[in-house]
Image 1 (tube, rainbow, N blue to C red):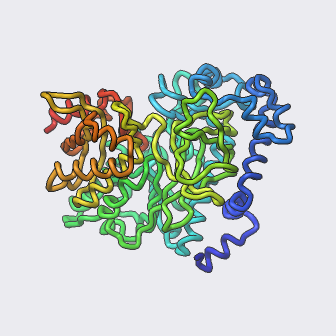
Image 2: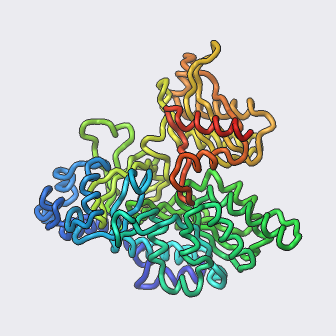
Image 3: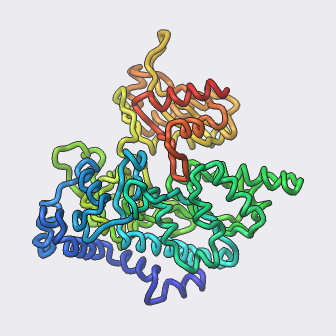
Length: 516
């Protein structure tokens, strides 16, 4: 139930909450209008002429006409055109030229580079503002506005190969477009510090700058909060000869932590312990290089409201139909709760039915709320077990709950039969608090997966593979692997959770053995 302040904010006939209310009341109409507008505006582009956007935009059923004429796309379908846009070509996928590019995966030299229009960056800026105003309405507590806000965006830089363009992580691009009032009044760390190229130096500089600040709001990826908070408490104790054990002793007025980039649910309990403030709120958001997609609009519901009017038209393909020759393409008009869908977007940056690579699951419709269930490639099916990332994370949470353990990071890969033992799944886990009995921890994982996944259960009963093998790793093992294998490490750099190949697992184990 809204507070008085919340009721007043939500009743305004303008602003982000007015937008939220409109698309929640008319989700299908909002998305249909948005698609028609995108097609009309891009009709004269190369892609618009290729697929006949002008004609599609005039169709009575614009969604059906669009899906009939425009196929689903992966990055390979737009790689060459994205490169041309990067070189300055105009009117290719979206009207005009682009000067901002997000690294969706890989590196700026060989990864997926997504053109990001200035319009999209402005929309994403107001998405962020809207999420903050929604939190104000939901909490009824404006205290966070009377201190400093600490954000940990990824780095961006001018591309030396394409002068005049900026390339990097989308969080960094959005930071460049932060509202003037935020920079002047609230921002704790200037962008030039947030964009320092060396991640360890950047964290140290941020800690030194903010140690004595009144930090009341944070925006970060959960994984890197763990690293920052540990360093913060250490520096505080060194500077003041104190014996602080929690962030709350350093920043006692911290009110809300807004997270993104990595699912919060795997880290929330550990973050709560590190911060140590009983009234702290967490708000999860889902933003990607391709667009900002959803945000947690209720304090006590971890599911995120799908933002249906942020320059992105959404399509969904059921995971069990994803590899069909012509899978059915769902929209918000016909999706169902508790079904895994691969997510496709059409956007005001010139992406057309583009596969983001994420899997979402609706917890409810009307209003439409989702959780991110993993990546389309996040599955192990080496022995017919079809274990998805969401199931693996749930198994890990269950094992932590049962044993009192806390996990910092993990990776799962199959291990072939060795010394007469069955093949298995190897769980490489970096613990903050390890279980007393690693074998019991593995048993809980195994039991949970057999309970929720019939394919897994059948294959285990048939002895196609054995019980999971849990391998505890020394502190810092995954970070060491990231530093060795990535051109640069930042707040948005992620450890792959699952792989049917051994590249990640063997690399991490080799480094862990050297550091043990």
